[in-house]
Image (cartoon, rainbow, N blue to C red):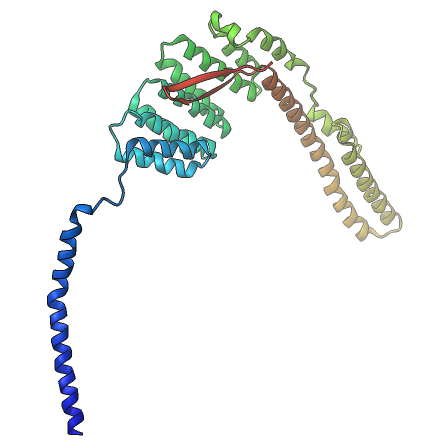
Length: 325
């Protein structure tokens, strides 16, 4: 028993000694290794302006818009004095626009305008803000934004483009006279560019867009289904006629057989269907008018609207007119 205790004490003493020696020499060995390889130590990551911008452009061109936004923002953060900060800011707005982040796009383009004032890309930002608002169906905001652009620029070509865009916004709102008024503001040299004579001819055809009178549709619905028939919804007309006719007949039979309680219940149900028949006919007239107007506007856009596109090349910003033929 005593021998075992002596051995344990002996082992403990040697373990403590070994541990102290290890602590003594371990830092030295680490330091020594570090001094030998110090010349070989390199930074883990080097951010290069050209490569960073090219990487962001690569992501944008591959439609990886969320990642592109992050890389453009990284570029702006690390290289705030680089000449490509403004294009990077514009690309951020375009990435939001293309990925349907329209509110974010508006904010991004406004930030660029506030920072750079009147430059080629700030002008394009005004136009993109109006496009973003238009896609949000905020047509009034889109028009106000274009009016702001007209006010700040003295460039006739830019003003004409803004007038042209406002005219099309009013077309989308079916405000025909206002659209014609803004097209008339375009300068004579650019009237041919935007092919306004051809547009004016077709725009005048808005007077013959097929329309249904909602009041007349409601009046005709006194005879169940007749209002739907007027608005060319033939299946709905048949259904309304059959249901209302069946309920009227059922109520008549109930009262004729002195079953007044059942007749009263059927009459209440029939009143609901009869009212729905009138309301539905009025609504279908409005829907018919919206559909026909929308088809007219779509045809105008396909045949006449000049589309603008923009992008970057090796030398900078470029704009392109696309004309329908």
